[in-house]
Length: 400
View 1 (cartoon, rainbow, N blue to C red):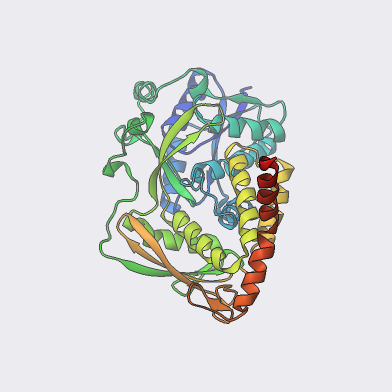
View 2 (view 1 turned 135 degrees about the horizontal axis):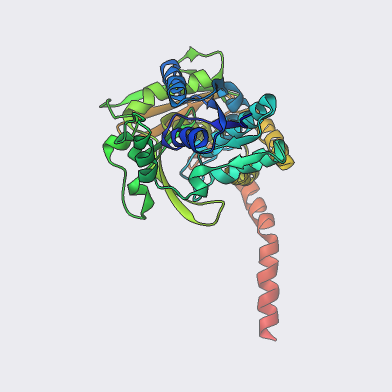
């Protein structure tokens, strides 16, 4: 009887190779699972299913984790305005947690002998997947052909050709991972410290010119409306905003970061909706939160993003930080106006009933209504008192 292996399957080059290798070279009964985190529409899901069947898998299922992915991960990234190295919205880093969790649960349900994934030996995904699998399915065999045999993309392509697999080999020169929270793009240009991805490598092409204004409406930190259009779930609002902003080419960049395994790496990404949402949300928070709320939230959010990036989603401290981030959003309600242009955007401003920049108390640089000049004189003397004492004592001591 053949051993069962569950393969996390995207339909791309790496996992297509894994199907053929595991079934034809190693004799496994391959069961594939595709976890949709919002990157695939119905037609793409169907195409992935067809690819799996054509490759000869024993069974294939698709699990839609989009809403669960948002509820358990994305909303906290928004609450924390998380941008890794002030650039990257953790597009792939975050979705890998949902994919690994779903894969582990399916392996348990199927009573599989092994789990396989297409991670290489030079990136973060191998650690994320392996760690989740070791925690949730302890003792299960983890098979990683690409990593174990140190295969290049060219070697994978050559192998599939010998198996008669029809593939868009030109497209396969770029590794694309698409999800609701952004799309990563890796290719020969990102393997060096100098170079930018060519226009044709970006999955979403720039088709809009001129400018366009959009209004984002938040309720307790969550995006509920776009241009006054309501949505049942925030994932729908994100996808709608993506359909508007993506065609402007905003949210494109190259992320340079430290991997879990200690080396530095570059990856291209396009994340129009995520970047616009984070910047709009942050702008609203600057108006409705106090300076110490913002300060402590920034520190905790940075740690949360880094720990998530390193695959530590199941660490209990993450639930503690999520509780803090959730509570911080009680007054983060209001509208944010953003202007889109080709390859750039800017926040025009916000409107909120919780806006602390209220004219009732004064106007910065112009007038004060909540205090007098004498109040400021007394406050200044007290506020700087300890520092004044320090300098006076030091001066007296230095004279002796």
